[in-house]
Length: 264
Ligand code: IPD
Ligand code: CA
Ligand code: CA
Image (cartoon, rainbow, N blue to C red; front, side, top):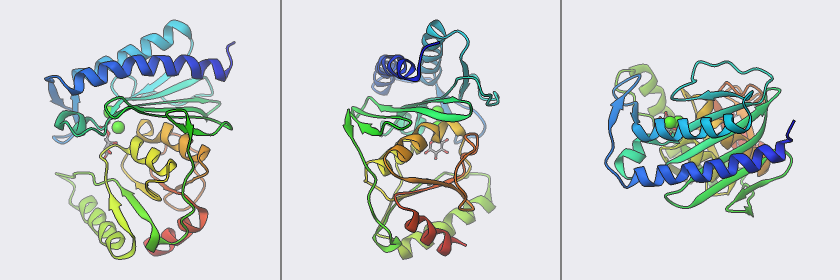
């Protein structure tokens, strides 16, 4: 059986190759359809990137499992090596020509994250992490900030569009107001995976996500942890269920505690 290091090297090559498809698609006309609602889009490139990555991994590791947005979204996590894939995170950005979109790929073994790769070929940003080996942006090691107070914190906030969910929209607006009153600034990239990586490199200090899926956050979560950051569930408990994507990520534990205090 190959070791995690070999899985990492292979996955990296596969993601870099698939990134060429994403980049080509970014600059080309797209076939756009909707999925679960009128604000949830998919293009032929989402499907092609996913198929390319899954086929390339299966060629090397026929027994590996997948949880992937466009084709294997219903799969449950087992102890087997399982790749968690979002072929394009930030599809709306991808369609709009807003250059924050990426491939997000994580590997879990025994339900524990071992590898995280987030690649934005449009801006040439490759974030990587392996459990216990640190986090990197384009091969240079990255660390979270040491911010401990909300007033000095930059918040990466996921401004989801809720066309048909008034209660969810009201909660989102309340949170937004709370942050506007209490923090240094708010940014929303439109890609959860990249937003988490921006926390890992110190560009933001807090990320809060609700209503997302495991493939949006798995790779980014490992990268943050390897960059010294904190991942908690929305109640403030340590993140230990990879399938749960409702999370608070912060650069320090103190900042997480302060955030939990003001949001309660
Ligand atoms: C989306 C992005 C976005 C978040 C959406 C996700 P997709 O993923 O992560 O930041 O606001 O809820 O669905 O659809 O572009 O893969
Ligand atoms: Ca996504
Ligand atoms: Ca996607």
